Length: 282
View (cartoon, rainbow, N blue to C red):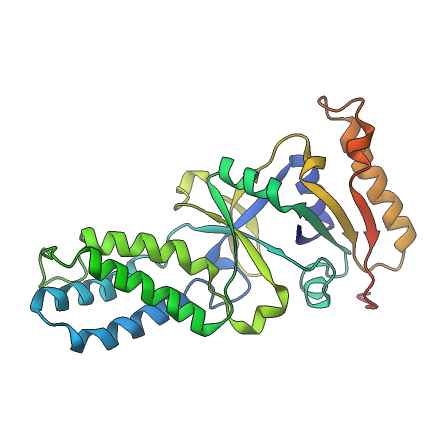
């Protein structure tokens, strides 16, 4: 199975030359509701549970979980988006612009290995609202059950953290990047997700449309041809020239790599092809 990452020409060159993907801080992705949907669901579920709490300590715990939701929205969780579909019109419109774009097909099993080495994980996004709510309910119920006998400290200050709230935050943070609006379901997105918050000194920054965008570099091994299996060239008025230059660029990168001077069969395993969708972006 292949998963595809869409990018423009600059992104494509950077991925191949630097042998890395960029994972964007999740609050800066295109969908303005990214990362916050999980917190909205959690807040509503906790509000519904509060009147049903059978003792003051349980009520204090629920209030603390609610109050601590606001403390985790700025954490440095970074994600890199991929799609099950390598030739999708909405993706070309979003990423190729007038420069021309690329859809890079990665081997799933190699992606998983790369993710683990970089302290990331690879998972499929959830678009169905019932499944999303069920996941958040499970996290909340699990937290309340695990800490059922735990005495909440400083109940008069629900915004303070505790063992229960720290456990809850860790579980919510882990699941929030998987929850996406159903309006994006055609993308069939998977995500590389940082397993923990990225420290500030490990973040890099790139120019965005209206602000600097924080991101984290995910490095893959030098023999990139073992992880990249296909490259789809997007819409361009000079398709044949674009295919030829893409092919020669990868060939050049292959032979400048000191690890693969004589393994031409590896290079030939990368399938370079053109988009089949009729669309003019120029």
